[in-house]
Length: 454
Image 1 (cartoon, rainbow, N blue to C red):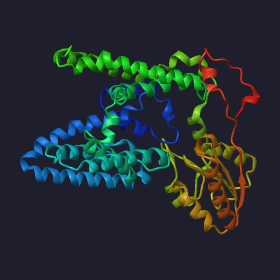
Image 2 (image 1 turned 60 degrees about the horizontal axis):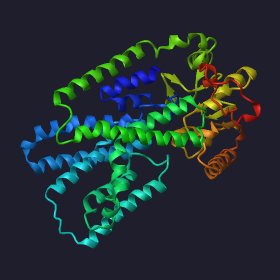
Image 3 (image 1 turned 90 degrees about the vertical axis):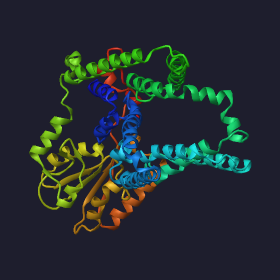
Image 4 (image 1 turned 90 degrees about the horizontal axis):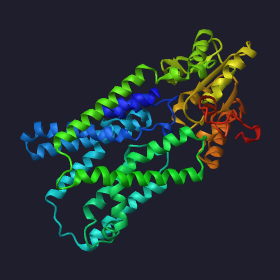
């Protein structure tokens, strides 16, 4: 609830992209559970729409050629920064305007082109180029996955696809006939409202239901999103689009101000009240949380060595996420995410004569993972044999069986060739029903059967 209150504040101030960037990290709430996560893109647009007109007002006196040249330079710098940052600072690169500006600037270039465009392009060329644009988008949908760097040079393909469609899908082209059909127009008319509705509905559903929503819930949530989108289009969008507006500018400004103040007020109160946590104080008795665990580790154990590994380690709220039981060369090393980190304390206390350490990141412990590069470089040149334990949250990190087989096969071969002993560990049990819902929501049954463990 505290996170939701903060997101209300951010939405009302057009800074939700900055909030979600700052929240992104190892213990960030899963994206599908954040009701207002999708507003990050609206914040990027609003920031651009505030800055861009001011830039034009100031720079226009320099002449069109200078303005276009400055925009092209900004476009190139933004694209280069996006491609460079996608592998080094993926969170900031994904959410911030500086690395998204080039995508919006393409729209500005299209506007410049359309203003004085030559519409005499041959019909076959319009057909070819518009269908090529559609193929670019289709290729991106089919071939791109969650490992594709975004935004980056890869993003040029769907973006240029949209540009080709906007410019060349003219009347008398095949794509124009498809996009001007009643079904396509209807989907387009409700698309913005559907975008605003669908994510909160699915997020709240996932928070309320089990870890995995059922097919029937999926269908109901989809239909609800569509119906609300249709209602919003006719009840909200149509009155604003009418040639005779249903509301005066004064009424719109006053209503928007009141709503913004309400959102900001509720968000600020929720933030100050820690998400109104006092409602659930009796239920939280006995919960220790991550903080006490990290505090215990920091008092009893040292940061990992050597310093080069320490410098590349994951940092969570100022806490170094790599430690070892004592100074000196390591004997046992845990690699993975927090699902291997929790083993450190038990092993270190049970085997005090063995120097145990761990290195974790929000990624599979594969040799080709960039975040683990320094760790595997250290292990490849280690002077003594070590025992390496590999584990992670498999149901979240493994994309498919082939990725799992390839990732661990190459990693284990590399470690064994370097003279190390490798132990591949299973994961902790995962319940089909969320234990959080069982504990903190009276409407959920607490009956969890052993045979239902995943």
